[in-house]
Length: 426
Image 1 (cartoon, rainbow, N blue to C red):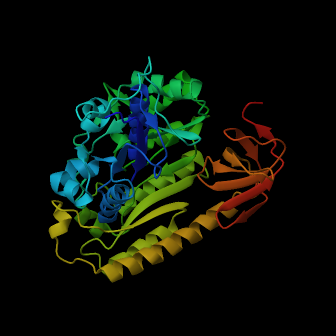
Image 2 (cartoon, rainbow, N blue to C red; image 1 turned 90 degrees about the vertical axis):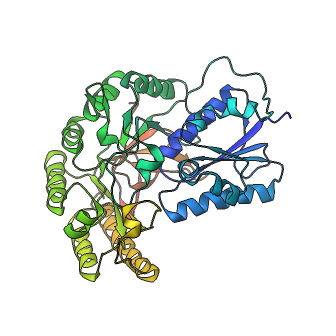
């Protein structure tokens, strides 16, 4: 068998995206040719997710889709969905191979046992391979919080951190070899980062001073981990984006306690107030889980009121999804699917309102965007440091540049402007 082409499809979080980029680099280094997902291929890797029932179903559906479209393709189900689901899910998906959290990083070698012989390998290893204008760097994996609804500790194991030196080398390679100007630091629970005493805030300082990257962005940080030192660093940093994603899950203390969360609504309020006092205006994101067992109408109303009183700019709303083996799956007071759908819709509408409200605050104020694309009419689109989409028109705009400008209008959450006043290169 002389298969050389491989396609990837990622389902789920930024951590999965970062790991897919590492897998892709390993395949290219081994001499495989990467082809877009959906094109004819010899090997197709579905890097799946099992955090929610929907993500798991999507992962299996994609594997079946490829098998129907390309019957001769060798389909691999990888990552969390393979780790948790095992052989029954492989059969359901019609996949040829499972690759759990360890095996997915040695797939080129494993595939040799199945007769796949790629072209001669590249002489040196490659940095993670992305098709976007920002790179995602994994700094940590695993979680030990054991929230009642969450299967991540079973899917990813105990918390462990990558060596800081290894992270710095990867970032510099992404900058110098691949041309990235912005990187996102991610993990399963990055607030628990600890490399022999080096904390997350320490790592951020090293990334700022010991790499050439121009802009740093953080994925979510759990309360009661490293949020205060990170906020203090953000206040003085010249590279770290002014955006904090602090998972909330519920605005009801009773529900938070049932979830096994490590904070109260008062603690959450205090953290946000601390950030606003230290940093000033900033993007504020949160995850919210609607319909957790025992969340009655009064508890849901508490969540709505809590969200409404805070300056959220980016809400990720999820319906509670029972995960086999988690404590919440067996709890009484399960909320009906129709009621969860209604609550999700209400929170999404509230989140859109608050996001548009946040965007309007930036009209006439200095912002910077990383331009991701420029269309034929000269308009560039990208994202601000505060994590708002932006669109501007200027002279000779180019993708993968950082442009400063003053938004002149906001259309929903989209900032619009012209005539940039500076670039990061000037």
